[in-house]
Amino acid sequence: MSSWVDFWNSAHSIYVNDAHKSAHARRLLEDITEWISDEDFSVLDFGCGEALYAEDLATKCSNLSLVDSSKNIRNMLISRTFGNESIVIKDVAECYKLKDESFDLIIVNSVFQYLNLDDTKNVLKMLNKKLKEHGKLVIADVIPPNLSMISDTVSLLKFAWSNGFLVISLLGLVKTYFSDYRHLRREVGLSVYSVAEFTDLLIQNGFKARLMAKNFGHNQSRNCFCATKT
Ligand SMILES: C[S@@+](CC[C@H](N)C(=O)[O-])C[C@H]1O[C@@H](n2cnc3c(N)ncnc32)[C@H](O)[C@@H]1O
Image (cartoon, rainbow, N blue to C red; front, side, top):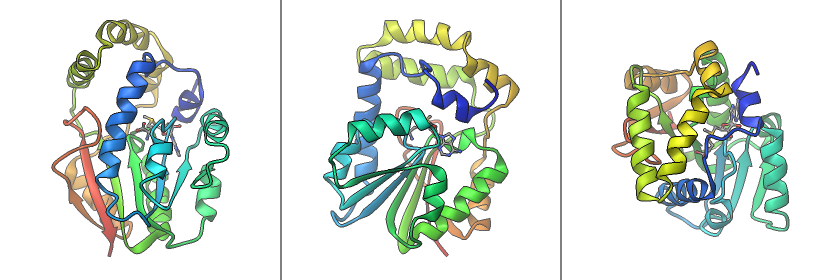
């Protein structure tokens, strides 16, 4: 396996069991909902993953577009949300073709670490076009340089402890250690950004940016930015 896109399209075991997936989804539903100030909002979730919160989130806004590079994830989302007229599933190429200025809120959680700098710039430019004039782009879980794997691990284990999946989580860490994740992390690497670097990147791509006090999810050592069009 040679790319993060392939990894996320594979049967990986980053989420160790259903309890982990549910706790992750509950937390993200709360985090994203805080940004929906009007039930008429049109929302885009870029790099959405399984988005187990999608059906609940769709009841809090007027429509929800889910975009992911993984064909397997999209197929799963399509069959899971079949018949729900508030939710549409798109691949990345289709996302580029969506009508400009059509979203009040765009969420990108835990995605840019898997893209190189050029791809990140292209996606930011595209998302800038898709955002309405007064819309908000919320980018969460941006990894700062020098964040140790120990810090990530401790945060995950605390989350696992409070949600009842600690033991399986410890086994999951051992599995991850011997998995494609570790191989890719060593060979391809993750993209990391300081607050100043990511703020500059947003500014270069047509946004004003603010660092938020609270990140999405359990890992508060990573950063969340709110960007609006200049
Ligand atoms: C860590 S998961 C995060 C999923 C979801 N946002 C969440 O927080 O649960 C990263 C997601 O980004 C997607 N992804 C990776 N590279 C991508 C790209 N170039 N364009 C769009 N999605 C991508 C993966 O398929 C995966 O679903």
